[in-house]
Amino acid sequence: MPGDWWEAKPASEADSRRSKKPRPWRDKFREAFRGIKLGVRGHSSFFVHFFFAALALAAALALRCDLIEWCLVIGCIGMVITAELFNSAIETLFHGLDDDSKTRIQGCLDIAAGAVLAAGMTSAIVGSIIFGQRLLLILHVGEG
Image (cartoon, rainbow, N blue to C red; front, side, top):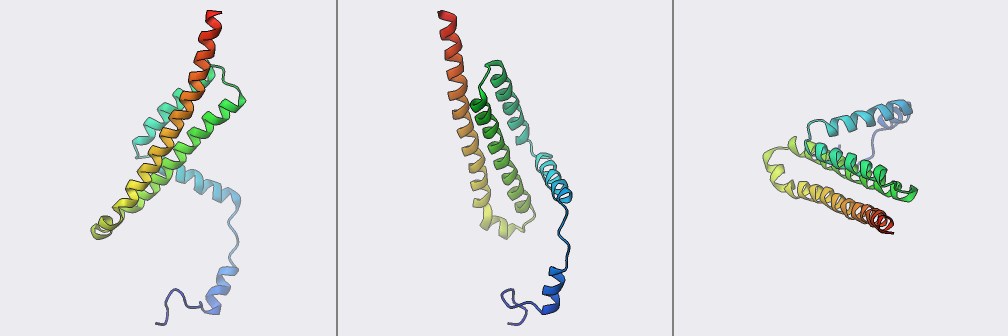
């Protein structure tokens, strides 16, 4: 069939794509920050993630975590926020589909939510190890 996606594009269309100027980095960053804003706004689960992120940062500060522990805590926070942003992007796409498509693609939403759960559980385990060890060290020093 003429005009199918796998056929070669006419030379004029290919030439016009090559002549486009690349987007400046500041535009790319502006779009990325707008994406974060859109992802966070309107999704109530971010409130929970930000609350626990603030709690983890306060605990790391209060328990005087070392550099590696800070990196692990911040890395876990970033992993959860990233997973939630991907989940929000998939939800946004999902809500724009017709009912028939939604029925077929429901599993994608479940998988994305599972990714957020996996990131959150991993972060909780890492935090428990780090903060638990710190608390045990503090209690042991207090006994001596």
